Length: 457
Ligand SMILES: *Cc1c(COP(=O)(O)O)cnc(C)c1O
Image (tube, rainbow, N blue to C red):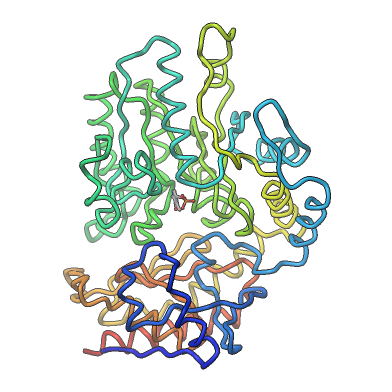
């Protein structure tokens, strides 16, 4: 089935020349010969609008970054206030109010013991920082054998080379293989593949045996384990039980290996708690945050770590133990102001509690899909709900990727006022927290109709 999607005249006219010079991310540019690029003229709340006034619900929060809608009056105001004082300043040797305030508030919010904040300006860079910092802290203590990392299959940590190396999604990684570090990859605890009758917690325990074995064998050369707590987002919104994180924390302590929690996508309330790690009641050695940190306004990331690791670097200059990493826009004041406004909104609007009601609407409005003959799974953790289309419901055999059925759902949804950009055969909603119950119901209906249409043949 090939769903057609067409723009109105003004948007089409703009789209006709928009591709002359811009090379878009994560895109085979030739696709735009048959599928127009969509120009967005403005956004308000959960709605995006093109040049002809055609609207779309931003059901994927603009790649998982937006929390409180587009052009949010409160956040706009806070950024404008900051803009009239200071737009940016070098962060080496200098500091500023928003970054000091933000660090204090992040430390209050984060799992107990994460008292130090190191900033960068995007998620991949935060992952690079955590990997380097882990390695370097051992080196500063004379542990020179520790040079490797343990990662999990189907994980995703960004697309700069080291972040890509510890990722496990072949689509992004395979081609760059010759350039990459060589981590030890263990199988994911992904609940999707648990045998019938086995609970997610039991499955997590079973799958943890692979991790335990890898730690036992390699701990002397391993700096850290890196993973995404609870949801492997780019890997298709695959979910697993918090039990895995509890076991991992224990084992990392036992074997003297750091634990890097990449909460770049799942932090800031996505999983139902402010941080995903809270659901396992653990404190990682490094917590990577980005995406929702500024509610989708400006690029910012942070790696939070503990006092012990901070002290591994803290010494006289001549010892040359200082951590070496910097970016020009590190800790940008406007971005920090957006992050502070984001934290304000969480408190002012009691967001974590209110989201529970929205999450229930997401569940209720899509529950029927589990009986669909071409749906292999409907899964949810907090404000992320994913539906996996399959060729064969019984065996969970996937549709061949070449058929691009997810893309057809995307086109169908665009024709019905929804931006539901899929991950392969996985259609999901991960909306801004200001979405209304009726809007979730509309998304669910479009999702259902779209899935019906593309699986009909
Ligand atoms: C998006 C993402 C990253 C990379 O962040 P960028 O800002 O896109 O570089 C890293 N880890 C996870 C879990 C992500 O979802």
